[in-house]
Structures are given as C-alpha cells and as structure tokens.
Image (cartoon, rainbow over all chains, first blue to last red; front, side, top):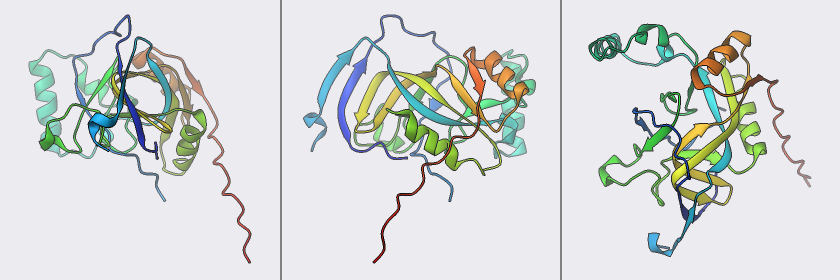
Length: 35
Length: 186
C-alpha cells in the first residue's frame, strides 16, 4: 500500500459530527501485503 | 520541506475514500490468557454485558494491526512514534487511518489477501478531523465505514457485520488482481 507523498493538510469539520463512540483505538501502521 | 510548507485547507464535507479490512473475530487475536482474563474482568467490572459473546463475533480489523474497529466512529492515535506526542495523523509520520482515493488500489490490496486464509472486506470510508492528503489517498484522524463488499465469507458473517456496524454489506467475489505489465526483454 502506497499513498504517495503528502500534499496538504485538511481540517474537516462536518456540519453534523457522526455519533461518538468512547473507545480510542491505535493508529495503523502502513499496510503490508503478504508475499 | 518543513511541516509549515504544507497548505492547510478547511472543509465541512467528509472525505470519502476506499480501504480494506480483515474480517476476524477478537478471540483470534494473539493475546495471552492472562490478558484475555483481565479484559473480561474489566468488562464485568464496567457492567459491559456480552463482552464474552463479542469475542466470537466477526468484526472489521486493520490489515496490519490487531486493532478492531468499534461500531460508530474510529479514532486514531499515533503508535508509530508515541514518544513524539503528536496527534494522528502526523504530517511526517505514517500514522492515521489510511484510505485510497480510488477503488482500484483497494481492490488490488484485497485481491492480495485472497490466499491469506481469512475473509476480507473493502469499501468506502468517510474521514474527518485532521486529514493529511497524499497523492493517492489520505490519512485521517477519524473514520467510519460507509459500505462494505465482503470477500471470502458467507451470509452469516455478512449479517453479523450488518448488525454490528449498521451499514450495507454485500457478498462479493474476490477482485481480480491487476496483471503485471508485460515487459519486453531483449
């Protein structure tokens, strides 16, 4: 998986914030595809 | 290029991309019996009924992490460089919730897992909060899946995902991996 180089940063604030779920989960590492 | 060299934009529209998940049961995680027992004790203490049953239900899981997506929204924190204390996604980090701009690379990624021995889901995902835009996709701070195409699973798994996440789930054949381009050899 390769997203290419970063281009810009966007602050996305939807008009209606989707319902919150209390759990916080860790970020993902870059995906690796099995051989 | 420093962080300050990046353009900062604002949007009230969620960004919609494509991504891939494994479909697995939390009981399949590689955790010790002690860790599992502590988890269940904590659930009992917090009054979370059904924690034991949920271990055996199919859920969306990161392709590379043992992280399961809860119903509703998923929020990322950086585990790549936790000492830095930056919020996910860091512009110079690889943390955050990854999504492709186009469907094709998501299908190619799903196809690569065809022989992994488990089910895979791919589909559209909405991103919001802090989002780092890349040439071929995004890394977001918050996300929720919008619809899923489920490969390598049956009706029962599809039904359980619909119940858990409340979104459309369609059983689909494994996507075809793009053939390698022919290279003329001289």
